[in-house]
Image (cartoon, rainbow, N blue to C red):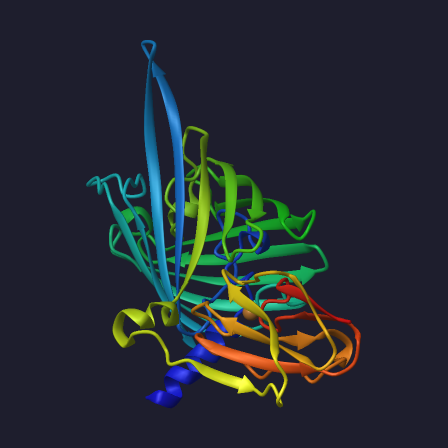
Length: 349
Ligand SMILES: [Cu+2]
């Protein structure tokens, strides 16, 4: 058990921040993402339209909540819950729940080349066994996405149906992307679904946010395959929750440990690692003195010197410290391996 939880710590800390990022998929396509092991992904899509009936502005909302948990081995289980659904009209079902599993057969989010995932699902509103084969192709700043969907009883109507969807996401910078998609049934007796979005990565966080326009209501396989008669506006927010972060609720704070050794030197500077940053980015000491780094975060960090100027730390657990003595004058730049945007400098006079 201990071993398993340590493995989860390592995976949670090393997880790329882009996981489940809106910078790698358009709004109406699930893409091929799978949460990292031990991570619960919470995504929130909210779309609305405003009806101008007799001068009164009535806002109608279509929220969809996604919860998915990464099981390891590129497997996930999850659910989409839409609190206002138009998918099943006869008899009308106001809410829509879809449960799904996802297995990413090849590739990884953001990795160059192909990623493929299989997504069996069940839609409780339609009583329909649904499924999707998703394919992504990453080339530089562009992701092309495609999906083939099958449904045994789409919209609660006793007919098996197939739908196809495709889209693209272009990353203009490391933080901003634009995306669009369209999805339609093979024999289109219903309107095709489309969406466009401006997507942003919130700097220094694992969260992405998108501003969207679409004619699709709920973010389920069925909801993403049919267009509604009105244009909706909205947003999506993605929140990865590393289960390890909640361990202090159950286990208290981890015991302090000290790694490295001052080797008889005075500790002349203290650097806290907090909120995924090195506090006090530059510290200045004299040759023969030591620096102590202390991890105040619930995730692991490292002190890794650029260009192998010094050996650097092992993984520093939450509440752990690392002490290192500098013997030669110079400017030592360093970063954290799991979070490369964490940077600091030690100046040795
Ligand atoms: Cu770090």
